[in-house]
Amino acid sequence: MLPIPPLDGGRVAVGLLPPMLAAPLARLEPYGMLILIGILILLPLAGSQFGLNLDVISAILRTVTGYVLRLILVITGNV
Image (cartoon, rainbow, N blue to C red; front, side, top):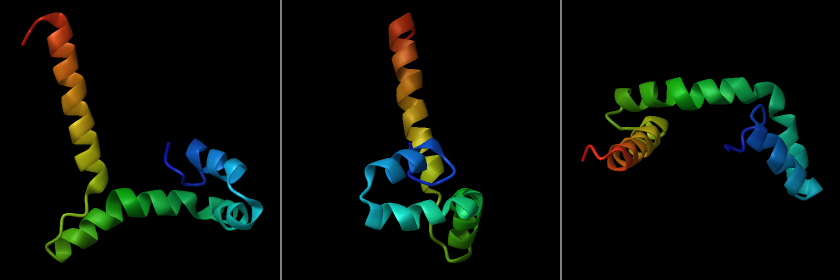
C-alpha cells in the first residue's frame, strides 16, 4: 500500500500518524491523483530527457512479476 492520500495506504497512514504529521498528509488528498500521474508518467518522461532512468514503478513491477511467474512455473512443474 502506497501512502499517497487518494489510495488506501494514505488513509491508513493518516490514521496511524500523530496529528502533527497526519494533518499535512490529509491535506494532500485533493492532489493525490496528480501526484500519482506525476510518479507514473511525468517522472519517467522527465528522467528520459536528462538521460536518467526514473521509472521506479516499472522496475518494481517487472521484478515482482518475474518472481510470481517463476513461482507459477515451479509449482506447475514447467521449470
